[in-house]
Amino acid sequence: MNVLNVPEPAFMQDEDIVLFGDMVARFLDDNCPPEETQRWRENQGVPRELWLKAGEAGLSALTVPEEYGGAGGDYRHEVVLMRQLGWKGADNWGISLHNAIVAPYIVHYGTEAQKQRWLPRLVSGELVGAIAMTEPGAGSDLQGIRTTAKKDGNGYVINGSKTFITNGATANLIVVVAKTDPTLGAKGTSLMVVETDGAQGFERGRNLHKIGMEGNDTSELFFNDVKVDADCLLGGAEGQGFVQLMQQLPQERLNIAIQGIAAAERALEQTLEYVKSRKAFGKAVIEFQNTQFKLAEVKTKLTIAKVFVDHCMGLHLQGKLDPATASMAKYWCTDIQGETIDECLQLHGGYGYMAEYPIAQLYKDARVQRIYGGTNEVMKLLIARSL
Ligand SMILES: Cc1cc2nc3c(=O)[nH]c(=O)nc-3n(C[C@H](O)[C@H](O)[C@H](O)COP(=O)(O)OP(=O)(O)OC[C@H]3O[C@@H](n4cnc5c(N)ncnc54)[C@H](O)[C@@H]3O)c2cc1C
Image 1 (spheres, rainbow, N blue to C red):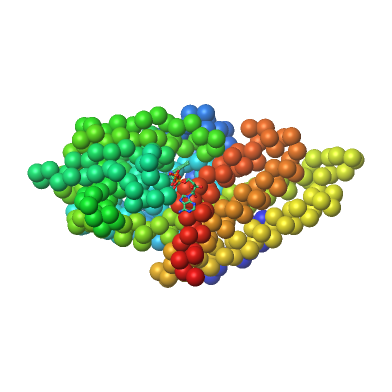
Image 2: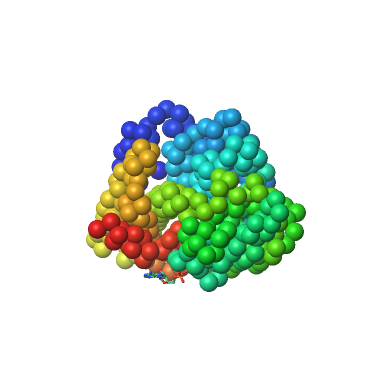
C-alpha cells in the first residue's frame, strides 16, 4: 500500500523481505478475503485450520531459528506480516500476538529443552499462543496480580484467574504471569508456560463480547490447582518474570504502533475511494475544500507517525529501542489512528456508521489500541520517567 508515499527504510528493501511481502499478500488474499473476515466477526474467532495453514505456509512464529523448525526470520518479517494483515483487513486474527509476542519469550528465555519442546509446534500451528498477564483485579498495576505458582513436589501448582486474554478461546500454549513467591513483589514473579490440552483444573470462561475486534477471541481463563512440571518455569529460574516482561514489552508496544498505522492507512485508502465516487450538491465529495483539508491533515499526521515508527523499527533491529521511545510510538500512533479514522468515518456520512462498511469496522477496532499493551496513560508514565 502506498497511500502515504513514505519510502521504505533501507532495512525493509532487501529482496527477501520484498518477496516475503508478496507471498504474505497472496496467502491473505487466498485465505482471508473480506467475506471470510466477516465470518470471523460473526463467529468471534478464526477457524482453527487457519493456524495450521499459516504453519504450512511458513507464516507462523517467523523468528524461530531453523534448528527448531522455524524460518529463522527477524523482526522485519513480523513487520511485513503485521502490515499486510492491517492493509488487507485481516488484523482480527491474533497471529501477530502468537508470532511477535508469545514465541519470542520462548526463543529468548527458554532453556534448550523448552525450545525443543514448544517451538516446533508453535511453528506448525499445532500450538496457538497467548499471554496471560491481566487479572480481574490487576491490569495496569501488574505487580498487583494474585495468580500463584507454588512449588509442589517436582512441579508447580497454579491458582488464579486471568481476563481479557487475546486468543483465549483457542490458545493451547499460554504464558501465565504468576507469583512464585508472593512475599517478594516483582522479584517473586515468574512466567509459567502452560500447555492447556488435557490440563486438569484449567477452564476457559466466556468468549467475551467486545465492541470491536469481534473476529478475535478474547477470554477469561481459570486455573484451579493446575499441576505443571518444573520445566514449565520459563528459563528455569524463579523470579525472572518481571525482567522478562520489561524486556519484551517494548516490542509489543512497537507492534501495536505498526498495526495502528497500517489500519489507518487502509482507512485513508478506503476513504479516498469513497469520496471520489460519492456525489453531493452535484460534485464528488472530494471536491469540497473541507474534504481536501481533512484528508490533507490525515495524510500529514499518518506520514509523521509512519516516519517515527520506521525510526523505532530501525532502533529495535539494532537492539536499541528503549521503553520510553517504544511507549511514545504506542501512545502517539494509536491516538493518531483513532483521530484519523474518526475523520475518515465522518467523510463517509451515514454509510460510515453502517456495520458492513470497512470504515465502521476500522473505527470500532481502533478503540482498543489505546487500552491494551499498557494504556496510553501508562505509556505517558513510562515516558515521564525518562525526563
Ligand atoms: C481486547 C483486549 C485484548 C487484551 N488482550 C490481553 C492479552 O492478550 N493479555 C493480557 O494479559 N491482557 C490483555 N488485555 C488487557 C489489557 O492489557 C488491560 O485491559 C490494560 O492493561 C488495562 O488494564 P485494566 O483493564 O485493568 O484497566 P485499569 O488498570 O483498571 O485502568 C483503568 C483506567 O485507569 C488508568 N490508570 C491506571 N493506572 C494509572 C496511573 N498510574 N496513572 C494514570 N492513569 C492510570 C488507565 O489508563 C485506565 O484509563 C486485553 C484487553 C482488551 C480490551
